[in-house]
Length: 358
Image 1 (cartoon, rainbow, N blue to C red):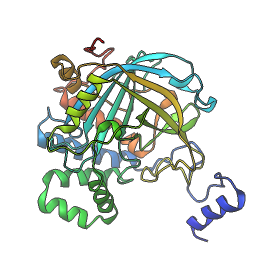
Image 2 (cartoon, rainbow, N blue to C red):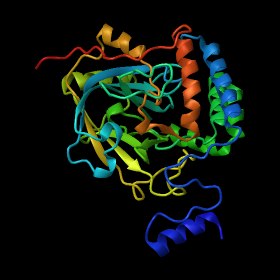
Image 3 (cartoon, rainbow, N blue to C red):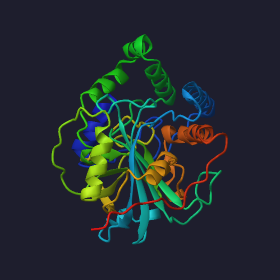
């Protein structure tokens, strides 16, 4: 019997999503680490280092175009589901927060061009030792997301090759996509998605993280429906629209989590596989309230460009899970070191904000 048919029968006959694992599938909430993973990751880090050096060490390999940063308050929802009350979400509380919006590419380009849109969230004042060995005393918890519900590929090496081919452009990019059909189909689908406003997008972690002893993915979306806005001819329309919106009205966002329910249907290692809302509904855990402010203030812009995000700025209760997160640890460390002139950066304890008074 095929695996997909077995999963279907589990769902239909048992009326639930948790069925016995088969083959090499890890137990619920657990990772599966390849014996030669260290060697694979070393290759990926070399590729990413070469990409960054090709562009110039002070240029980011990803998310090079910054639309803006906004500061606000991260408040745990008092009525959140008890299953989510782990780690940062365990006790009611409020924290300072900064949100940074970017395009995903390592080459700044017009906002009309095909690209993923990234969102980095940095929560300040989070107690507990952090997993990043070079910055264990950091007071921040990072959440890293983009507007794709799942990753383009499960293989970090293939992803590095895709980035290199994209930077080379022309025949190199065309040949890579012609020989990687699965990834090419996702790139084509991405090109058809027109982003009218960063505030209209939903953002997902794509990869899994610990939620205490459980595993989760997280996502962020605006609190209320956003009015339609046509795509502008302005090559920087996303950042300009973001600045206008937060200056005139402020913003509100909800961070929610999906809890892993089955090691096959909601896998940790297969980050290309969506955890659907039908299998694991999003459980809201926190509200991010952004007051009216000027995100185009020069001090704010400079601080925004210098921000570093990594999912490993994290407490143990939210440890990143899966191979893509594991390779991020050495890859991000190398990138941040190059970007900061050879020194490993220490994370900020606060962020500047220019509020607009009513």
